[in-house]
Image 1: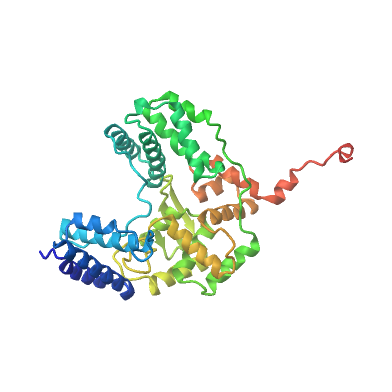
Image 2: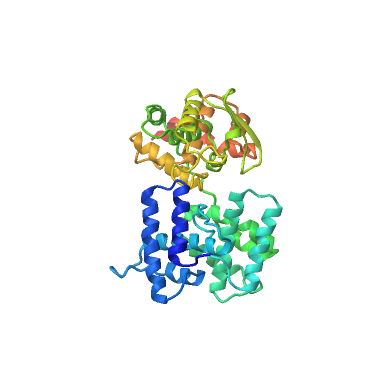
Length: 401
């Protein structure tokens, strides 16, 4: 097997072209391969993972003397593809997930605890999104105490929990800490350290109770008209309308498969990723039309069974909720609503509000939204302004002075 940069590079370019990558993307890979070839020639050696790691670490532009995000992306993705070929003899073009789960502890005891927590979450059958959220906060805490010179959780105390939460205020709003604490507490309970669990309560983090933002009727009409008029692609229209009319979570939209769609019955049937509950929902004619238009005329040819796939190679399922957020934001911009913070959460709230204003009982709304408990749906009552006004008591005449 040819292990020169040029030899591996020719295989990579051929695989990219066979996979249907855009010529502009292939050209960018080819340019990076030439840079890597010059780098290897200067070292007088063929390609190896060690050489690739050194090459990928060169993230500072010699022209500006500053960090270059473009160099990091180009050099990093090329070396990952090269490494896959060296290890397996195959070019791995799979999409790399964003984020990577955050930093991980390095010391043996803390790394073992992290692995044990991952195994515990898997054995409990927690949804992938839940495991990621729980795991990220747990690892963040373990890395935090490790940086403070603690190599075993036995050396941590309640103060380390409070200090960790305080350190998050550099990048988290105080009102968002409740969600961190909610994801953190299960891990602390898993450790069996009652003092660490008690420390979370001492932090005094309270759940925020804001009035939920929803789209008004005029804004919803603008979004629907933009989708119906073809201002966005069939795929983007179908995703936006699905979220708007059904209130589906982003993870369930991403996970939707072709076999989940009943084209004759105009319904979809899924098992929700967050709750593992089965759910069947009817689809309006416009949504079905956009879905059919996408599948029949716009969806790339691919073996992937998911309904929504990337529009550029590799044509696999969308990566994560950020992909759906980007699609919905683009639709809102096309509809003339660029100042709205769009996403499935907003559209989910709006769908619940429409049902509530139509006098649909809370248990039915809970079933449609796929809540594990009916109490979760009561939060949407704050969005029904007209009915809230009916609950307002008149101010006594004597108190008006």
